[in-house]
View 1 (tube, helix red, strand yellow):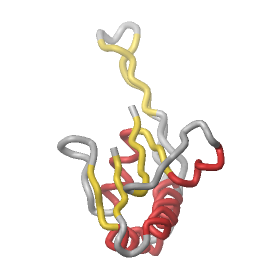
View 2 (cartoon, rainbow, N blue to C red; view 1 turned 120 degrees about the vertical axis):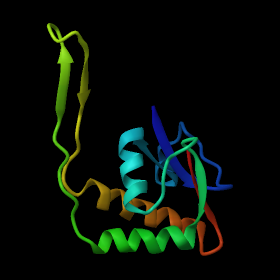
View 3 (cartoon, helix red, strand yellow; view 1 turned 135 degrees about the vertical axis):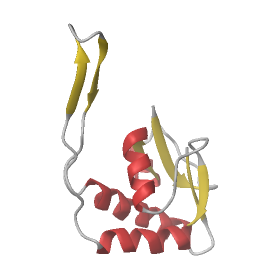
View 4 (cartoon, rainbow, N blue to C red; view 1 turned 180 degrees about the vertical axis):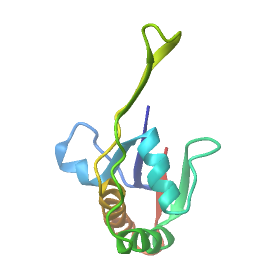
Length: 119
C-alpha cells in the first residue's frame, strides 16, 4: 500500500512523466513517519487534506531540524520461528527531510489558500 500527496483540484495525468512533480508517493510506513514529523497522523482512515500554508510552515520546521536518522532494515520471523517472515526495508538518513522538501514544493504549487491532500 502507499499514500499519495497532491494539490487538491490539480489534474494529474498518471501516465505522463511530465506530471511527476504534481504528486509524491510514499509507502504507508514512510508516509506515517513523515506526517508524524510534521505533526499530523494517518489515522484513522489514511487520508486527509491540509491547508498548504500550514503544511509549508511545518515542512520548514522539519527541514530546519536537519537530517533525520537512518532507519535500519529489520527482518523477523521466518522458518523455524512459528511466525511469518516480516521484512521492514528501512530507509536512508535524510529521507524525512527530503520528503518535507518535496511537500514544500507541492505547497508552493497550491498557493497560500490551496489544499494538499493525502491518501
